[in-house]
Length: 554
Image 1 (cartoon, rainbow, N blue to C red):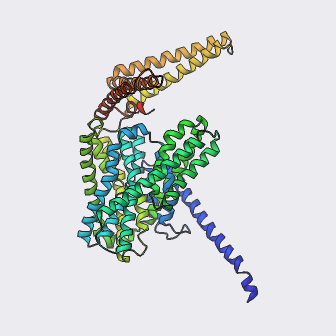
Image 2 (image 1 turned 120 degrees about the vertical axis):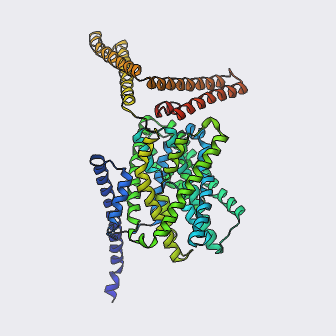
Image 3 (image 1 turned 120 degrees about the horizontal axis):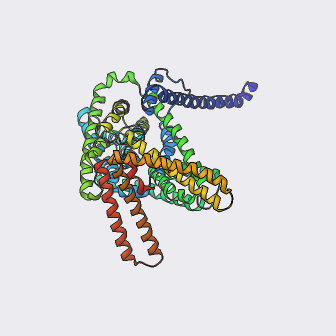
């Protein structure tokens, strides 16, 4: 007996090591499948990468537990979502976000609350589900996931403003939806009632949401000013941003605040303040690292979505799934069209065109957040049958939005004239880029001659080659502009926006030198911003492409 017991710790250790190895092998398998799907999609079929991952996951779901570990909501929410959200916020410029903050916050906050209550009421009345359980479902299904749509935007050349509206809404409404969902489940667990005090609900919501943002702002400011500004080491700075992404989430959740909103705030600070303070080498390292990490987490998340959806359960729950999909589409339409109408009245300078609204409605896909929140429902708060029904409804909605809406969004973008990369524009961009590059090379060549580094004979030979190439690209660019008047108009708008940016910088410089009073400075800045907003509206209404729109964001 005693000899047998003496081997027990060793057996336990071996079992733990075996379990860890199975989990590690499962992640290796997921990454291998993701890489294989990416290669297949890029070479053989024109299919969105994320949609292809979901389809592969659906096929693999017929082979239960082949990964060797259990997929939990903690894995998705605590491990995969924070780096994904952090990477997305790094790319958002505060100047652009500020100009579109009214519609984004209205959609992310008011829109989620309206959608939650509308979906909850309809689902409760139609399917007989208790109100708080239906409200919890309304909250978790209100979190939009734009990953698949944004990939279309980048490939089709959709306006950066439209991409910002969709992505900005999703980043904030993820956090808001989690807060509302958590509050609904907490109320159900503590009271068991079907009604709740709206005032207390709003106060608690503001505490959790504002507190999460405050944590992210504080940590983002500390990292940006103390580390990214004073430590010139790309490895240390990259490691610090990883710690920030997960640390902001964990610290906020520890104090029962919104971890997702903390990550959003921290990412915005690093992307807009921290990146300015870093060296070019460090910035390239950070961008490449976070791009890779986003690819890995996206791949795993969308494979997990396919793995978790149990198609065999759809047959017995077809009516609830149909009700859920119809309700989600109805609530999304009400939220997008009503709130953008209100936003256009509140801020007419940043008018949102109707074709943008159509894409914002149809691009409201559901994904990782909805799936993760649905998996947390199995905690004994609600009846087991209701939990299973809500989870199957969630799986059905996620699958419908990713496959049906995800596959039809690109044709809709083209039909609405929002895909702005025709051949003539691509040719113009190429010639303009080559001309810019050759002129820069010629200036460097002249500098080498003037500094005595390059002998005159060699300079003459190399300068003739550069002059010929510059003349060739300049002639080709002028030909394109003569044949396509819309390209000239776009370049003029680009130039006007660059000039406005230069004027704004000059006004700030004059104010810092004491040449302008604060009153005059604010007046000049306000006039410049009004002119920029007018140009921005012209670009949005006429659909002149992302290039003209983005010049103020550089």
